[in-house]
Length: 449
Image (cartoon, rainbow, N blue to C red):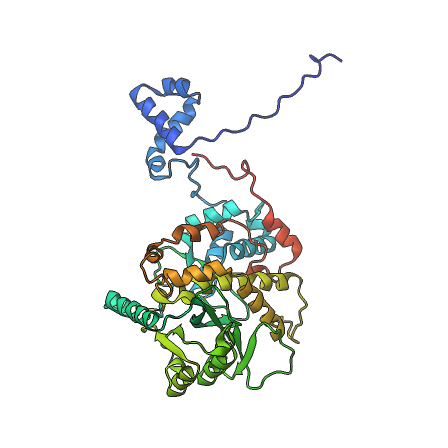
């Protein structure tokens, strides 16, 4: 047959998208001339010109590079009402709500209520629009336990002067300048971001396992060496387990460090650092935790030929390398082996069907791996950043004023990315995860003016 009898159908034209800046340009031209002239000039239809003129106020309020204002009437109002109630209830109780949790809850509700959720797919773009409609954003957990005192500058300067005086007097080697900090951990390794209402100043988070905690004691020296981590488990008696050699394990009935724990750390970690056995004069920087300041602790430091530089109360966020620069990447890295274990590790369950936490020896391996993954250069820079190991001739003082926000932004994942290892997906079937991982179709959710 001829082509005239079987004409070849052209593919449907792809719908064009126009940024707000372009639409405003067309609107201004239409005001100076008329709608018809603006349509001819910019290759659009008169109806588009009319619509853009009618929405000029909204166009001016949105980002210039944005193509559509997608915060109109929801397609599934009943579903969104239940999702919003879930988020508000969880946040009132202090529990973490992630974007994944929102999408998962919405998908499960949609399957249970098909009459109110026809063709609902729980896409990433739907979640973004839902949060926008309900005035929600992804918020960082606030730190309310520590408030900076009024005499900030004078105390920081006094601390730095003391460190410089001690270094000048004793000439410590970089390998003999250390920092120690206790870091509380939870068995479920929850993240530190949650979906919450805009404008709130205090963001509370609960994991549901606050009592299932342990303490990791980290130590490092100014030459980049990382000391063996000490792990304090919430137990009365040391379990008969074979722990990895890369850590030192202690038990405490509250899971905390105490005076006995500090003594064990000094004897088994600090004194056994590289060069520690010969007991050269050294400097240990730590905070005002009461177990650091007892007479017996001071006597033990003296026997180890170690001077203590005690950080004033409320200032650890300003002058302690571990607290500011190293604890966060350590906790970020410890979630990686944790997530791997959640996906493919060997697990056991209680009679009620609840999954047990990993064995203590497995947790020790997580801690060792996470701590080993922190590179030595990061440790070295952290000491210089807070004025503890800088060259005494002033040549390295620039480290004190370096801004790390840019580097932090580079390592922070996009809020809109799907995380298959999110905590809320632990007990979710693979077919549901596959649905959540489907990327959005640009055409599917387009809503212009």
